[in-house]
Amino acid sequence: MASSSFQAPRGTSDILPEDQPYWSYVWGTAASVAASFGYERIDTPIFEETALFSRGVGEETEVVEKQMYSFDDLGGDSITLKPDGTAPVCRAYIQRGMHNQPQPVRLFYQGPYFRYERPQAGRFRQFHQFGVEAIGDASAQVDAEVIELGWSWLASLGLTGLSLSINSIGDGVCRPGHLAKLVEYFSEREDGLCSDHKGRYRSNPLRVLDCKKAPCVSVSGGAPRSVDDLCDDCSDHWDELRRTLDLLVGEGALSGYEENARLVRGLDYYNRTVFEYEPAERKGQSTIGGGGRYDPLIEILGGPPTPGIGFAIGMERVLLNLKAQGVSVPGGPVIDIVCVHIGDAAHDRMLALASGLRATGRTVIVAPMGRGMRSQMRYANSKGARYALILGERDLENGVATLRSLKTDDDQTEVSLDPAVIAEASR
RNA sequence: GUGGGCGUAGUGUAGUGGUUAACACGUCAGGUUGUGGCCCUGAAGAUCGUGGGUUCAAAUCCCAUCGCUCACCCCA
Image (tube, rainbow, N blue to C red; front, side, top):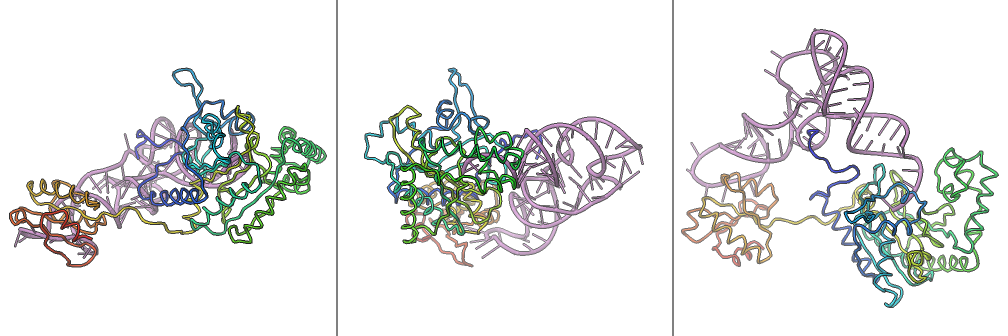
């Protein structure tokens, strides 16, 4: 590996052919599970106006403050590679007038996201998410539907040992009061907080609850819980959510859930319901996906007041766990036939046969030029081909070729130089 | 942004001061006349991440730097 050669940028990776079966399995399953819930695919641009994120995700979030890939384009506009999927989808909802469709509008998406961070296991600068948004319905039943959808996908992939945590963080009515109580609680116990949060609990007390360091964990254990401070509306919503989830658990659609008062989310747009999916092994990243309700967001982005809820699940994290659990996925493409040719005339004739065979649906490779027959046969074998189709000068005169099976010993037949015949023989 | 570990052919490794840096897998070419897998032979492929220092002598010791990786933070 010469140091002068290029490398993929830090935190990015190539998805090599050997990995593609995993990706298409996971992608494909996501699309079909989402479709089975009546969700429709949407693709938004890779980049958006910077302000969409600073306003939508929140000026003071970690993501906006120090993780965005932003730049001025040649026209002088500030552009940002999307760090998040929800804000762009909401932008599209507003811009494309989706409030004129039957509500809620159910959408799903999959694609790359960008955050400038120090990479580690399951965390990259370019990563991929499968996400879902249900916009235009404030009921707790939609929360449960979204939660079930994500769970259903993860389970259908073959992942085991997953867990689901839920919480309610209140809304504009009750959250201010709760935050004030939290600040008061922490101010009385400031000495017990970890060094990171001693001075910072005032600006964002919720962060302390999320802190995994021993001091903060023990202090926040007794902290006021947001679910205890919910206003009537939020409280009803919370009760209704749990009732619906219990129903789903009873039906076996969910294996269970945990109420976690310490669960908060790092993006500002969340309110009421928040949730996370956690993998069996807590090595590396402890969350493979999460989401929540974001009722204020559409209005913040300039649309009519419209409730919404969604989740995003990290593809790389799903794949990490899939591989760790040894889940097997459908294999990649199989080469049906490698065309082995002896002599230029045979090669030229092979080209026509190969296209004819491809037209019948066969996957065909013509062996490399300039190699002996033995070498071409070895090539065919190492490509894992099912058959070698052998054509030499002698055969040209006789109008036949040899179709040799590479999966069974000494199994070959003569075939005429007709794609339909060869396709049939290589069934 | 903070800390730990690691950097030798495409991949995985050996080599801890001394002649042309080794092995396996992989790649390519051969093993007689038109046939793969196993086996055999051969070839290509590494300025030992980079720069500097110590030494008669450095992949090997020291320093710096870059990169990779793991963790913290945060999140998917």
